[in-house]
Length: 117
Image (tube, rainbow, N blue to C red):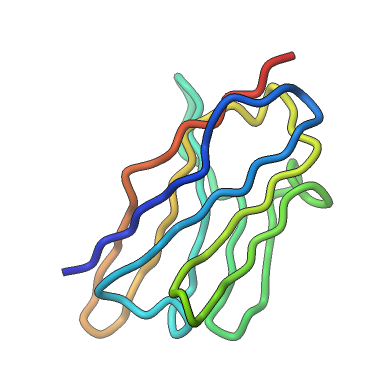
């Protein structure tokens, strides 16, 4: 059974930092791409950052230069370091991974990030 558990969200002032964690069981992160998504109230879920099985990373334009996605293979955990946070970063953040064999699309429960101005 695949389970993704996010943690690290909270309330922070604009300009502050948070580090989100996504710990996995039942799936090996280093052989699958893992993405962080976010969803603000009334908006669609959007991709924030993704790390491939080979370690390549990609970011939404809105977070480039401020957010960093990384992976700890030993802990089977993916992180999202968020710096210089802005009020518009406020959202529920989810991690996601998709597997080929067997085919699956897995999401965590989400963690709330609130940035006050």
